[in-house]
Length: 66
Image (tube, rainbow, N blue to C red; front, side, top):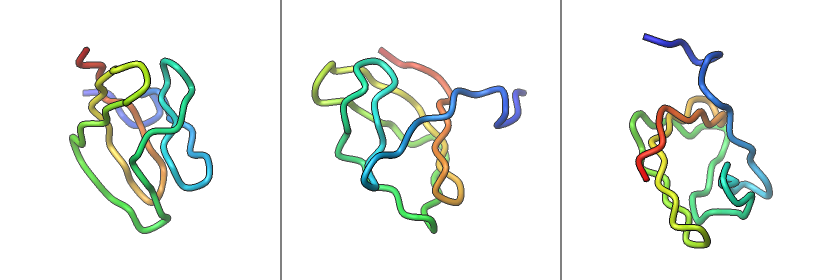
Protein backbone atom coordinates (compact mmCIF):
# COMPACT_ATOMS: atom_id res chain seq x y z
CA UNK A 1 0.00 0.00 0.00
CA UNK A 2 1.23 3.49 -0.82
CA UNK A 3 2.01 6.00 1.89
CA UNK A 4 0.80 9.61 1.86
CA UNK A 5 3.95 10.92 0.16
CA UNK A 6 3.21 8.81 -2.93
CA UNK A 7 -0.33 10.20 -3.36
CA UNK A 8 -1.03 13.45 -5.13
CA UNK A 9 -1.45 16.30 -2.67
CA UNK A 10 -4.38 18.61 -3.36
CA UNK A 11 -4.22 22.38 -3.02
CA UNK A 12 -6.40 24.27 -0.56
CA UNK A 13 -7.44 27.83 -1.44
CA UNK A 14 -9.50 30.01 0.93
CA UNK A 15 -10.29 26.90 2.97
CA UNK A 16 -11.73 25.01 -0.02
CA UNK A 17 -10.19 22.04 -1.82
CA UNK A 18 -9.04 22.79 -5.38
CA UNK A 19 -9.94 20.25 -8.09
CA UNK A 20 -6.76 18.65 -9.53
CA UNK A 21 -8.33 18.45 -13.01
CA UNK A 22 -9.78 21.92 -13.69
CA UNK A 23 -8.14 23.87 -10.81
CA UNK A 24 -11.50 25.34 -9.68
CA UNK A 25 -12.55 25.43 -6.02
CA UNK A 26 -14.89 22.63 -4.93
CA UNK A 27 -17.56 22.95 -2.23
CA UNK A 28 -15.52 20.84 0.23
CA UNK A 29 -14.25 23.05 3.04
CA UNK A 30 -11.18 21.98 5.04
CA UNK A 31 -9.99 23.36 8.39
CA UNK A 32 -6.78 22.33 10.22
CA UNK A 33 -8.68 19.86 12.43
CA UNK A 34 -10.40 18.07 9.50
CA UNK A 35 -9.84 14.32 9.17
CA UNK A 36 -11.47 11.93 6.66
CA UNK A 37 -10.69 8.58 5.06
CA UNK A 38 -12.09 7.56 1.66
CA UNK A 39 -14.07 10.78 1.19
CA UNK A 40 -15.67 11.23 -2.24
CA UNK A 41 -14.74 14.64 -3.65
CA UNK A 42 -16.89 15.82 -6.57
CA UNK A 43 -16.14 18.86 -8.72
CA UNK A 44 -19.27 20.67 -9.88
CA UNK A 45 -17.33 22.38 -12.70
CA UNK A 46 -15.71 19.45 -14.54
CA UNK A 47 -17.75 16.61 -12.93
CA UNK A 48 -14.58 14.74 -11.88
CA UNK A 49 -14.88 12.39 -8.89
CA UNK A 50 -11.90 11.64 -6.65
CA UNK A 51 -11.43 9.51 -3.56
CA UNK A 52 -9.43 11.55 -1.04
CA UNK A 53 -7.92 11.33 2.42
CA UNK A 54 -7.83 14.42 4.64
CA UNK A 55 -5.53 14.47 7.66
CA UNK A 56 -4.64 17.52 9.76
CA UNK A 57 -5.94 19.89 7.08
CA UNK A 58 -3.86 18.26 4.30
CA UNK A 59 -5.71 16.60 1.42
CA UNK A 60 -4.34 13.65 -0.60
CA UNK A 61 -5.82 11.91 -3.67
CA UNK A 62 -6.23 8.16 -3.21
CA UNK A 63 -7.73 7.49 -6.65
CA UNK A 64 -9.74 9.03 -9.45
CA UNK A 65 -13.17 7.45 -9.81
CA UNK A 66 -14.45 9.19 -12.97
